[in-house]
Length: 390
Image (cartoon, rainbow, N blue to C red; front, side):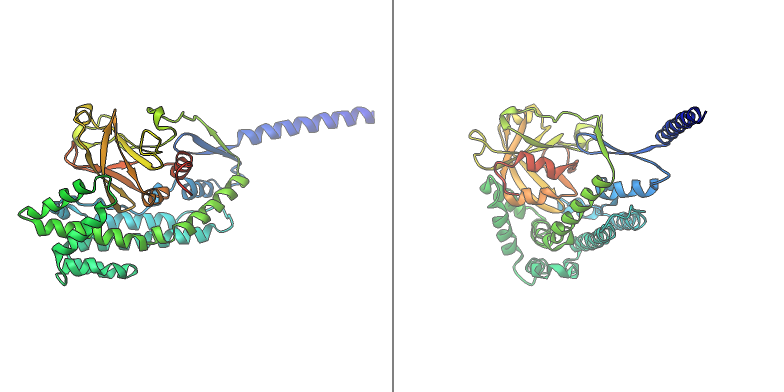
């Protein structure tokens, strides 16, 4: 009898265990997010893990777009300065700071330090952008961004304390030396001096390509990027050890030019059915040059320019804005893209960029095209391993 009872108890225990396991499995929930190629998901037991903390932690570590401070679009002509909206920028800044402060986080080691670093970065960037907006109208305001005190020579020229035209010519010369077509780059900018509002064009250029390009390297966004990047890497590794992340619904990388080799490809954020007058590029790519395309150089290209424009063979003047740093490049048509070599600084800025936009001069749309940035560092490292030291 005792043997029968024992067998019954074992069977009952197993049945209870199976029922319990089924109930636990049934009670599981999932948090998901997307990177460039895949959907990522984490299954968790809501009895053991607070769902809101998990969602907020995923947002901070893997999906932080809504926590970022705004990037102000640069005015490309003096008349556009009046359209800069300081109040809207301030509203977005406050929203980003509040959202970051209010996150409920899984207690990973160092995560609160990372939150504080992100808040400090956002505050500093918001101050930088607010001062820059005011500086387009009142150059003296630029002095208020004290981390960039060494960039004051541009403010001196803007205020009339030194020769405006001489400073403009010197800045154009320095910037265009890095361009694939230096002479065309300089001629295009210097031609603006001959316009009726030539001094306004010179002041705009000195504020954008002079002071802003000089000052931006002192912003915490750039100055502390390596430190924050190391903190984020450590937190991501902790998260992956704590939770099992599953990747699925992965798309194969796009590559329409096998002769380029491996490409880091980034789509433009253009909504379906957007009129052609409202956008210029459909994607931006970066690859390591070959014997056919700029040997031993890094090459950037844009896709989406019309065939009629490309077949003229005339270069396109492109302006790339990476986290507020402006680079002007002359892009040479090739097949269905336009490409140009870029320097290591361009790639370095792109590696940890939060916002990138591309503007093509005298083409369909006057508005910069925003580029989607997902898994940027991984893609760049893979595509450029042969010609860039990380």
